[in-house]
Image (cartoon, rainbow, N blue to C red; front, side, top):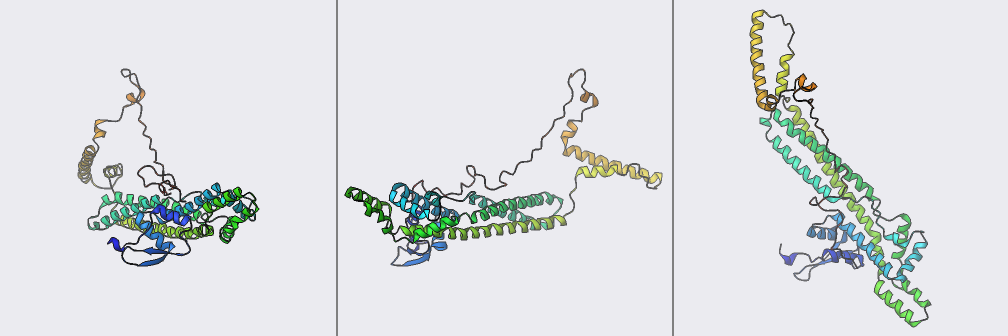
Length: 388
């Protein structure tokens, strides 16, 4: 697309900083300008404006909104740490509703963050499964028992993917109520959005008689308490609702992926049931021993002919087994002497024990930190910079 027609958007750092400073209000439409002409559009902050940033920087929406919320909280903590005036006035409002420390207003309540890279992995896995299943469906005219193995793999992959997605669904459901502050803390946020701008934070200056103290306090207020500080609190109060909307949208994506995997699993089962049963050389061998000592009422001459046919078929099967498993012919089973120990060898036969350790489902909770090259972590690291 011609750059002249592309919207002029701030960098990711600048975007987070503008919301954290109240320059962009999440409850208002955001102006979007274009290089060509004087065209200016006004779009809603969510989802329109956020989606433009998300697509440009390839950042998941839920990750972007979580980063913005962190930016607002860090902004306010910085102001409290640098300005005693600002902190004391916030403590005054806090004391009316809660006995908690004022810094807890800006605490992150999410205990188990949603890991978006896990969703991407399951999304790709579902696509791969569907591609394999479509390949099998396109070859059904030539289907035989060899299709059992690939279909079993597809069924297992569907079941595993649905388990992982169910865990993701549970994490999202758990996060839903943790985006917003506790009830008492929400009342504090609402109170702070209604304070009469910076005049509220200047009232303590009237009690100072020393001009030097007054000058120092005035400088502190100008630096750390902007005239529209209430807009920052308003953003912090409204962001949880936006996060809850996006959380629900992601839950919908997870549910759709679960449905697709269920459909693929059902199709794989249907195809598998239509295939001839899988057989092996061992099955062919075992059937010759089921007729031993079973009188069938036939004459000696007929029995002789039948025995010859059985003998020839058994010989062919044993030959096929030998060719398919040469290790059996090369390594015959040990004799009793080997087991009990012979005089020349001086040692007994020890059977090798192979331990079948089922691989643990290390992604089963789908919430462990990812290793290198596995998609990164959920939280965006925005250059390690502060947002104020």
